[in-house]
Length: 185
Image (cartoon, rainbow, N blue to C red; front, side, top):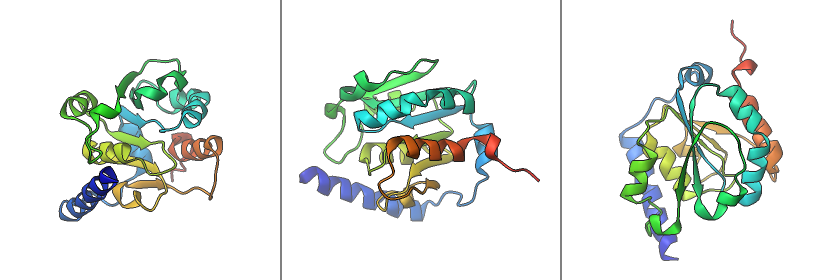
């Protein structure tokens, strides 16, 4: 209960800060993806979601070749992550998250040691740690699945049909992020 109150206060603060310190509203997503050198994926807070994502890891490697890829994962879900490739992993435990849902200073230092150009929040439901991480990253492109509590915090929101499963959600996401789907004039 107390942590929900803290997260609501933090979320209201971020929305207020966003109005005071607005970011660019319009970006060319494919140009941004092309310029991107580092991507942070906030993995789902759900073992089934992580497993579904890992099954589509070939798309990550094809869409983002030669990019620095970082995965943020809660320690309890690490056993569900089975992906081969060259990437960095940042794990966190509940003890590293404050009552307000904010990652500890040490965790933030580890997360942002490598500046990221793009953050992708892979959670279908609102996940405060991922939302805070995306906002704090100051990445030029911040991607999430639609959810009323986070739509204002990200600059690219992937709309899904209600009750869409993990596999079809990731298929939709990668369709939007794949530069091969871009139609240039």
